[in-house]
Length: 318
Image (cartoon, rainbow, N blue to C red; front, top):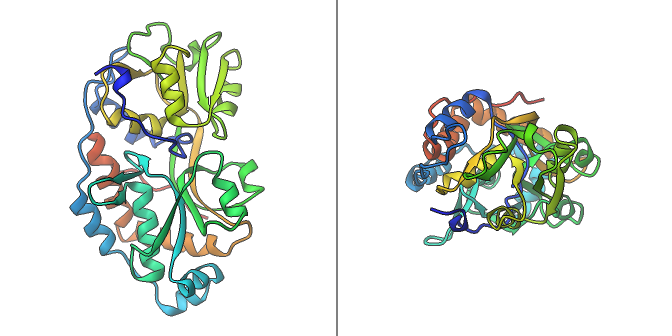
């Protein structure tokens, strides 16, 4: 399938930022058959919707005392709705199923489990689409109670908002056309036209690891993909997990160039600055990690989708 046939999806808000644990990467890359400068031939397996829905429906529910211990959670409990900023275009993390109208994936599962934990019903959330450039603003403007969207924790962002987590880690990756034999890793990007997402960690990563690249910033993941497909850029640098997400949709004319690179990128859950929801959510994350829910959600949303069987250890929480 040519690169032009890559399914359209808007921005994945992380669409941009992160990197997975080594064991995941090794098994995932091998399974997807990304060999040297070859193409990606495999197509990702469909998500097991029944297993996903059952897992969310069996999630824990907080008692009254736990809710009362948090002003953030108490407000959500009182209003009866959790206002969620997220995406619905990420195959592995948060994808809208147009047949049943439900959003599923790793991020979506965490959001729904947290909604159930607070409100006793995983469906009681109000969804608002966010992009890489609008995530902080919806929190600052009190338009969302939280944002979960493959959202990298960075010092600059932490000056404006607070983060719970991390709940997942990733790194940066390079996507090129399968016919491109000159770019084998990020070290080959000098003098090349490289797409990345504005508002993501991509520009800073390129400035550090490929300072001689000719960087072109795009507002959405899809725009960056289109620029690569059309030959307007030589490569696309973004979160490695996002690129796995893209390739899991199936394409035979694109490949990952080299291994993931850069610092470990930790995904967090964005909250209003100073919110005591940080402690509440971190306690929730510890709970679902301890009872095996996190591992089951990863297996259903990511592991089975990419053929990776090595369940990663969740990142350490404060």
